[in-house]
Length: 175
Image (cartoon, rainbow, N blue to C red; front, side, top):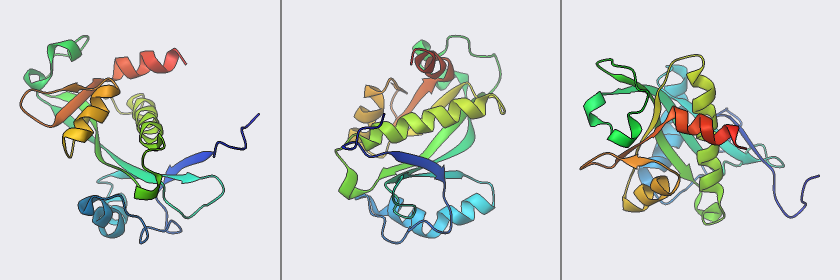
């Protein structure tokens, strides 16, 4: 049974019907990307762009994230995240390249919901295209704190954080 007080959200790929022009999250580069570059990146297969929307409103974008394949040198990964990593010159990873929640919806837990959806999608895709971890490049120290609170480990002297795919799998099995 659904709670009438709690809105239901849908995750779907960015489409032409989504209202990109009214999206604002407080970070101009993230706003501009969604409005001017995201569709082109999808067509070119450079990024997958997913939006979160209310079930009752098929056009309003509550938040979005991008995913793409990436790689990291093994030496850059914190020891705590190196368990069960393959011994390759590059460790396969999924990059959450951009991540934003619209300003009017911030502070309502949508960032955590959107991140859970991004991790879920990353884990699903790792069964098709190998990926040992999820990587994020935090935009500022607040973002570092947000990702760290969700289990990500910060790489030394950078704004980059990682979360092993095995940790994501273990967390989802416990649900």
